[in-house]
Image (cartoon, rainbow, N blue to C red):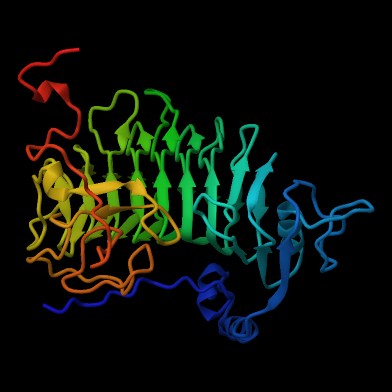
Length: 418
């Protein structure tokens, strides 16, 4: 059966008439005039970061990214400050890879594109780190931001929520790794309005909030009440949180998850309703061709669940609906995922093995994207999860036991010895 090709929503970073929904309604004439003004996107300036330092801009708004002093340079902070001061959409690039340590968060309050040199570990990787209890980005309301091809990691946001990013605007994360971040809640990203995540990986983000404190939500991502999050071709691995080890979804919010992989995320502290993948309450959740691996994956409380089919869960049946093509109660061996690794492409992924139930599922009627997280074409019935297995891929799931003892759970053995 030829799959239906699903095209995820595109977040247009340029101002346009659709942005009028953010503006006050003051009559037809005002709205028409505003639409005419905003219909032509303003592309102000491009800035190239040449320094890994953290100094601010010498004169924000003059069109030049330069720190004070005789030997001035363009830092990321200076570039953001300059972009904030200029009207219209600006772009920031990086002259080479490297690590940038930020002493305080970067507030973004004007439309911006930040284009790194890669998220994968290597000579060209762009890594942003917050230090001293600070997150990296705080995106203001009514602001459209695209962040791509970089990593945000090893940030300890302390008592803040949103370890890497706090988003109150419209945010697109594309080919980004968010990893090893900590916060009292929302270990990776806290979203208040609209967040789109594509071809990205969230790994080992942690919430530190304890029971009774009202925190510990969303190890990787918090979708706050009334907001929208759409996730496509992305991987969530070994994130940890008290309420929703990967994602927490609050009242009135909408979460769409397409062709993504949740594997071995962990509950932190004591929680009577475990959810290693998705915890949602009084919200709407839509799932399509996802892998949920690791047990106790979902907890839905008064949730409208929409399943397009083709989802796999191992073990148990906590995430899926009564939809043709959804397969609950699988063993880890049946799912047969390889480790999180560099299998090619812009971010680390978990590639299914040749015999995995995720490969060309026969009963799946779900749609899929033209390309997977690695940029490889999807074909046939479309594989489940973030990565589409190719004919020339190496074997990724190297198993010793055929009876699913790979988890290392010694309680499954009849006897053990030191």
